[in-house]
Image 1 (cartoon, rainbow, N blue to C red):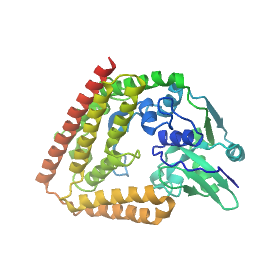
Image 2 (image 1 turned 180 degrees about the vertical axis):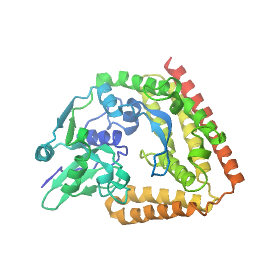
Image 3 (image 1 turned 135 degrees about the vertical axis):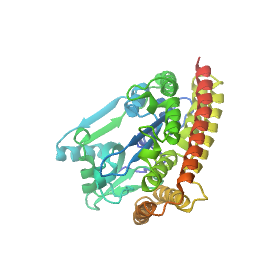
Image 4 (image 1 turned 90 degrees about the horizontal axis):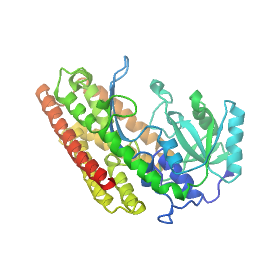
Length: 403
């Protein structure tokens, strides 16, 4: 058996920034400006910070999907570590035995192991059946214990408590995707001399992703333009990607509304589209960069968080019973996962089954008339544009503070 002594770092929430936060905290790494562990807010800001991304997908044989991005997803882990001057020690092999040996040797040396594992293959996943619909998501995962005799691996993930899997389950999850198969990463501490430049670069990433063309993809999918594009799709039924076409009243619309609500509050581990988290980063940045004006931008991003909360209420309003039920199920699922981990698996799977039942009911029992659907989408568009206006002000204030 190999389990790291006195491991008790479970505050990290996001797969990338949370994993690195837990790793550094366990190893006693301290931030130079506080003398405390690096916060996840700081790591998120350095990795590229807050963003807006809007995407819709429609594949034959599957429900259409709507996805929102609330943080930078352009190589954020590599960006964060490089900017902070972190030396990375990567072991990568296609050989299963070597992959297992690398993991055991790393733990035996007293260091947590960051491995890449398919979230949907792990027993505490929200997914009811591994590989359902052929989904996969290879995320950095922190392993701090491995015991063959007990048939248990200990993981610090998106929960306040230890998560567990069997060695066989972790092995299968690590082998799920060829390019990430049996990758293992350990890290040196950040270079404190890099902190100022890392924070500056992270802030400018955020500003540019809101106001300029993205590194990849359409400008309609990112930043301030994405809000306007989304609002247009809600109110222009003849548009190619309109909600009237892609998410018509019924199962499709219900699914999209719940997916967006989940993205705003739960998918990345922080509520309110992570705007409060980003504001916390800006408060730290004002100290690190010695620019008090950045605190005003932080206040604006707190206002943006409240605008996102208003938008989420418009997505699943209380006065429409099946919408209220979906919201309650999403919050209950997240609470169970955060506080109970594996112990909540049966309850979470029951919630997933309820979602499936509700979606099916929406095919014939959708609670809005055709006219009410039009009004609902118009109200949603107004809320989207309100978030746009608040965040435009926040980004303007931030850019002025950095000028």
